[in-house]
Amino acid sequence: MRLLALLIPTVVLAACDGPYRDLEASFRSPQAAPAPQIPVDHIVLTSTKHVGAHSFNGVMSVKFPPAAVELEPTFPFGLGMSTVLIPAEMIAGCSKTCFGDGVWDADLLIASTGTEISFRNTKQVVEWCWSNRIPMISGKDRREWLYGGGKLPNRSKFAEQLSSRELYDRQAKQSCLGY
Image (spheres, rainbow, N blue to C red):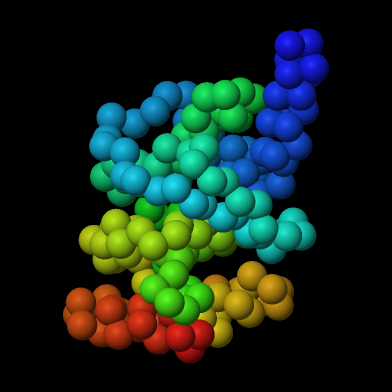
């Protein structure tokens, strides 16, 4: 029992370093939003500032209150971690990444923290991106930003894409294919 009491805080503190700490520093929320939770079992955070991917499997509650995204660590994993509430205007773009056999991620790109939040097979994220008129970024631009030190395109470049759901979905498919 004593070992478990020492092990849990150590694992929690080690697991929440990196991109999640960056999100907490910018978007810490004092309380959870009154919005329904969506089912997401697999979230991965990658960063322009930190090496590697930080995977959160079944330990985050995800909500989409109006014009925001909320991540809330669940107990006991959430000990020492805060809820983050990211306003839609802080999300520079959305993207989609495919891995074959129906496995894909919906990605939120936060330029101010250099963080990509990827949600496994979660259609609600793409719907939320469309309803908040957040551009669908190409796979090429996403990779250049995340791994090559580039900048994400300005939202103003996406007026045509955001004028039609058909164009938006076409770019989501292209992004998924890596274009």
